[in-house]
Image (cartoon, rainbow, N blue to C red):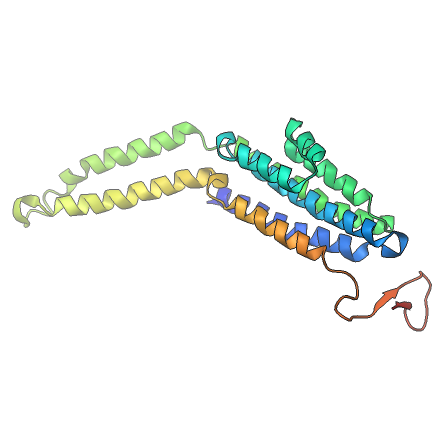
Length: 248
């Protein structure tokens, strides 16, 4: 269970920090330094690069036969063709996607202190990726699973002998059949559940996580300062009685 819980927490942190990264990029962006078209392009690129990383991570943790074609189709639909093909060609696709995200962050016009804060959110993605790779590349030894299954089979095979005398009052000991069947169902079910939890990435809804991240990130960058009527102040770095200059 701890393996599944750690994998689930890694993806939970991905969801939280993708939203945090894009929110900071949108809020810190210095729109006075560039045109509106450049600002829209930069922020959309930031959102797409953020999504591209988690989608590449999902492909990296999934079987090739299950996700390769959907992965390529999604990337070509959402990313520029050259960027998508560079990710396909990389030996480690999440690393390439994370590099693209770092470049997108560096291209944002803002103070370097704020930019470094956004980079810290991106660094958390690398930590989550490393933790997930550790789970993927260090499975429970096969002998452990086989030994557990053999022990359960042997124990259930001998169970009727243990129940013979206690169930002697039933006709021809017929009560042993439903009792043994129910016990076998529950015990083998628990063993199968444990086997599934050993490989958490096959049961986590990673595609749904990626879809949510894409929707949320693209929505966040669609927000612009003052679009809800709130006053926007531009602080010029010196103390003032009103705390800054109001931007109409």
